[in-house]
Length: 120
Image (cartoon, rainbow, N blue to C red; front, side):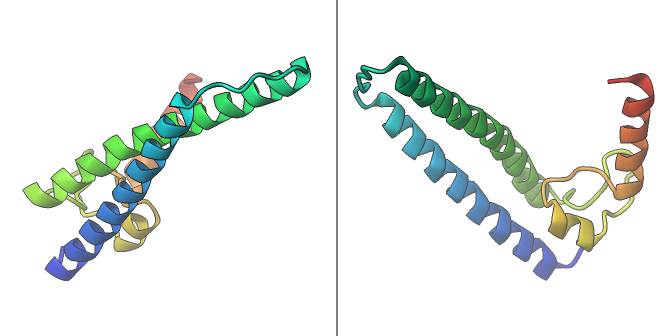
């Protein structure tokens, strides 16, 4: 992979990482503020549902943060853009669509088909 492509992906991933970390800080700040008292049980339930939804989103973002950090490590050690299954180069188009991917489209499709067949 060309150095300019690596620089592009490093900047893209770093920007996304910083954005996600900022969201996480905001969530922690919001969650540690004093709880509101709701006289109406429906309002309380709605508030709790919103908090639960927010936490699920942050959990997904936490998983993405881990993937981004691993992708940045692969850039540093020279394995970014290389399929971990077949060791072929992952296409730039695929990396632009999903920069944290570790598999080429062929291997990922094969894996998903296997999971589907096994009912996983």
